[in-house]
Image 1 (cartoon, one colour):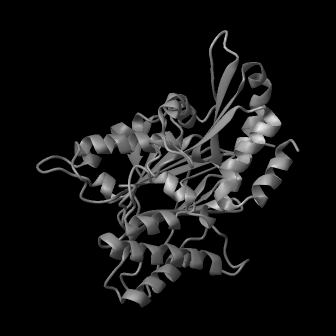
Image 2 (tube, rainbow, N blue to C red):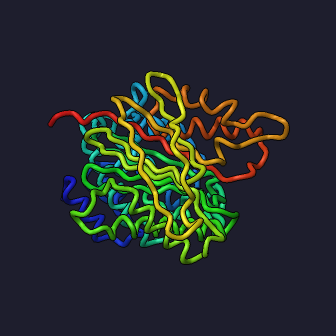
Image 3 (cartoon, rainbow, N blue to C red):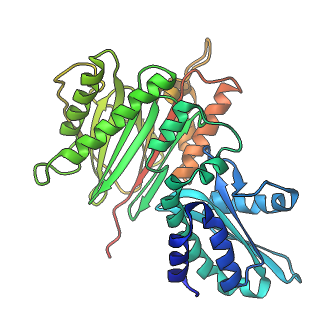
Length: 395
């Protein structure tokens, strides 16, 4: 068998924990591959680790090129003049979420013709991997070689739909820190027709208590979003969703716990942005190289009181606009007797990312935040989301 269709069948019929080996056998039989390695990104998306094998000196030689392919999201070809062997490093991503890199070694003369086909295979593999991810522990174990997740972080990462998303006209990426010990900070998103709904949450408290509260809030928002009868409101209407979610949290905690929340719905076709500010997450707009706060009317956090009503606000985005959403673990991060990170460095860090795609932009801001802490353990967990919008091109 050869072609994308046959690899799809092979991956779909393979055991979930054997996708890497299935792909390796397919590449050898159908593309003349001498070897292949699948590199999986860790929770910070700063380190790649080979799936299913221990890292050794031979693999270390591939890591730099694989890392370049992951960062640039473009293939990297390793070959030397006069040598008969080449290695292709292909980004593995799924609807805009960066997953890892597939490295394939083959005869140098075959590399130019095989490259387009192998790029398609990498995309197919990414889709199969996302389906297998919740059906085996293998890829979870591969991702955490640089550290063990706390129970709270385990819950938060399992709750996340994906760290990134792309479709024509819109790009989204987000990150939670500290990646291996995040507690109450979280984000959620969903696409329904022309509407992209994004929720940034900061559950009250610390540790597992905060994670449990945020888990309830995220599922309450999802239930609210999915419970509104068709035809009564569009997926972009936020007020009813906020009310239903707030009531669910209040009924569980009686007002003793609440969730600071920023709710957004973006019409990806028109750029209409609907917003509810129900807490501490802060939003900044990057337009024409300038950074400004999007100041909204503050409303009550979800679950603080019963029978709370919420009011949407609206803004029209322009071509090329970028939104950053940051929790108080970012904008209010501080050190003794010094201005907060938000007062001192946040806008500068955001401006420096203007030429980077969202996934790289949030990594740059997170590095700036770590530099601000100068090696000290941050007092609060942190969330960053970056969202780019431009009108979709005509078909």
